[in-house]
Image (cartoon, rainbow, N blue to C red; front, side):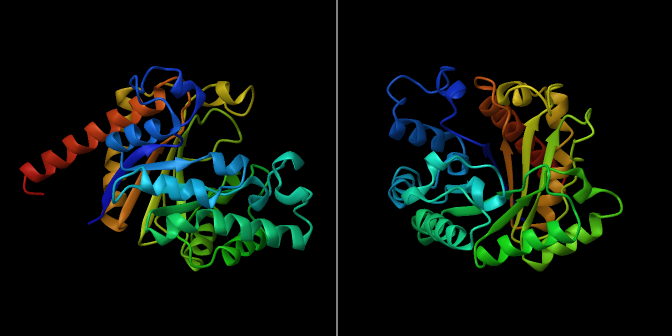
Length: 291
């Protein structure tokens, strides 16, 4: 029987910092992380998608958090086939994912950047979130295999943003692909109103880890600004839908990470707090009934 760790997909989001959730005296970089770690046992590092992580920052994160706290690190954009600005590339390298030498160097730098987390046993997983235009099929599977080989030995979680991967015809094939590389399938909660919506499936593909990311249910998904797409405040009934699912995942994986990505002031931390309460209540009822 595993454990469920609930947290958010950032502790530095501008909307969260300005929301007042962080108490006075805990609003600098160190204070924010120390405070966050008193409330949650896991966080996703999303800044590593926009710029390569540094070993110095990773070491500071370890220092500023208690034993047992873990970080899920989102892979740098170039590594998962997303557009990347030249300005954030290291050493004046071009943002050209077709150049094998560039990819070798960027993968090496990403590896060095997360090394302190790995060495301290604080790396929950590396999240490989693939772009919405990466479809299921031979080309998509080859790209997934390429990434998995580059990240061999890391705890991996993979999120597909094109619904074809989890279509009825492809689910078994996708599950087998992730099992082959020991990667956790990332389940998502999101609005189901657009054709690009990924269904809320969370198959177990690794006995060590299962990850669910809660993107919110904004009607603006697939259009508008980032804030529009992720602006959503979860209601209790929406969270409650996932409680039995998360408990089932807990029965099959050593750890379950439930991470809230709905950026709207303090909406993500409030949803995470509420989900944690609902899970504790459900587990208490089970314990009380002898189940």
